[in-house]
Length: 196
Image (cartoon, rainbow, N blue to C red):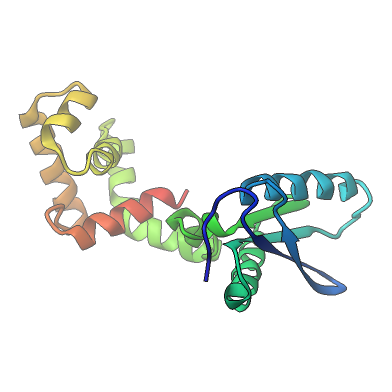
């Protein structure tokens, strides 16, 4: 689907859709990287921004390919990136193929009511407990996950004793009914924390 990402080594597909329809272009990189191409496209689209009125420009830029065998996949990737860009809030929005490989981009594609519901179901009790008791369970959970479950690194970063951390993590499990020993549960918590 993609070729080497070396600058100038191939082409990238760019997709645009507006009320008039969709356009796809194969763009030679000409010594630029795909990221530089995306920046160039955004600069050009921003020039048009003042005349858009109520319209928006959504751009999707694929990865790079070096031959015709990857063109169909390239165009599909640009279309998916463009669909995600259309969920943006600005007048001009661009998503690249590299952006599509991040969980943050996938989360952005989830409707706001569903994101709020998921976050509330997983973290609502922690948020309420923190607000009522002036505790830092949510911060503790986030730090614990960012430190890949390391007790020592989490305690050090939060400037608390390991026994304090142990108490907080146990309280998190009690309030949520979920185990922090489970990778699946940790992933759910991480995704909920990213849904702000």
